[in-house]
Image (cartoon, rainbow, N blue to C red):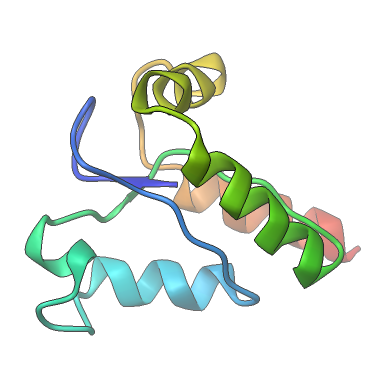
Length: 97
């Protein structure tokens, strides 16, 4: 889940390349996209799934929930809404090894 700032605009997405997708959002590579227009670049929450089908199912589930639920989900692990990109990369490395 990405955010523009604490309690700002939220974006929920799924990808098979989270590092690459994170870079694309931060560098605004897709001009006039939702994340570009609203400056949604902070990775504030994430989870890994072994199978893409499971990830897509979870994405749909999260999108279905109200904003307040998403904020609680973020703040359970990231109270200050810090950018978790570095932590995500470290977690991904440990998932691979």
